[in-house]
Length: 152
Image (cartoon, rainbow, N blue to C red; front, side, top):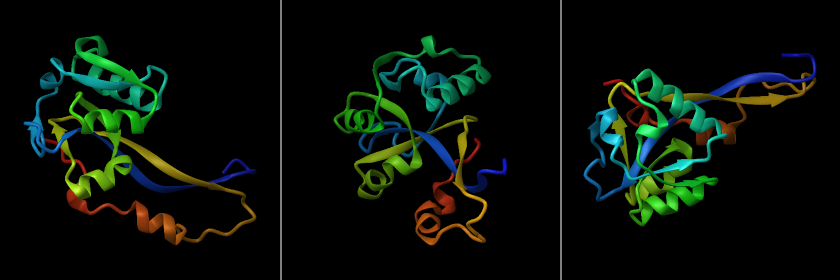
């Protein structure tokens, strides 16, 4: 709390590699080096997800330039649509593809030893009481444990 705003942790947001459901990586755990030949669809350089990915790649001994990026797109929807039509794989938040995963048009490819997570927070004025996470947000943010990343 900084006096003007109260911050409350809402949930963790995991970022995954997604591929078409028919892709060889679908539902598999791959090595980080398997990402290098691509093709990959990436977010523009200045995005938070891009920085998160670059940090994780560095920890694995790789640089973004080691990946075969075929396209950089500034929207999640654009990258998801491009993956759906088979143009490559991409990194996205679990929340942005929950419907496609449920419909089995896309699948997650886990990357061994590669966990990308960030935290969602709620921000509100201190005069407003939030003893618990608002129910609509809480209901949409709870992913089953099977959907959470596994270090491997």
